[in-house]
Length: 187
Image 1 (cartoon, rainbow, N blue to C red):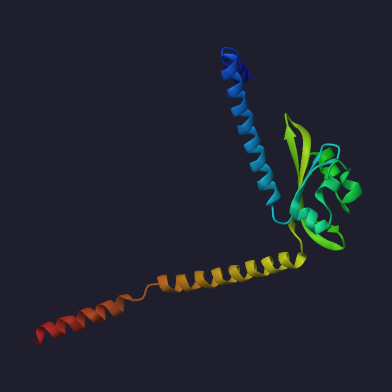
Image 2 (image 1 turned 90 degrees about the vertical axis):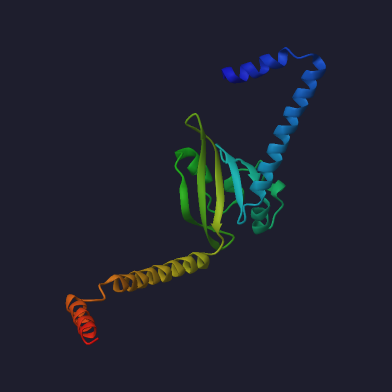
């Protein structure tokens, strides 16, 4: 807090014209940061939303509105339980506990979602919700590929162990030496 006071103290010492110019720069910087945050949020591919601690939707991104087939503006300011089927966003807000990689049925589809309480000074101020997978088949596909990779790793580990095994025994070395001596003596 002291650092913020120092910033404002330094502003107070500026002439009015410079003060206005400095404030305009800071407002522009904050505006640019907000625009970037909104762009990032809108590019979360499978859909995301944010509610306040009471379950009121404050932010709803484009991919989620496309999935729900609504204009995002229709949902802003509404209670999440009234517009999203089987939601637990309000519960995550009450408990303060994240719910990660859980199923939720929305519009007749089983989805994999996460709900992350956002805390400030230990108090939940918002909840971030995100669709992780729009189709359970995607999860099954990933699990299948993971199992395939695990089996390949096991196979490669076995092959590596075989390659690292000693290739020559003591008798094969002794046998080679005797042949070398015989070859030298015959010259």
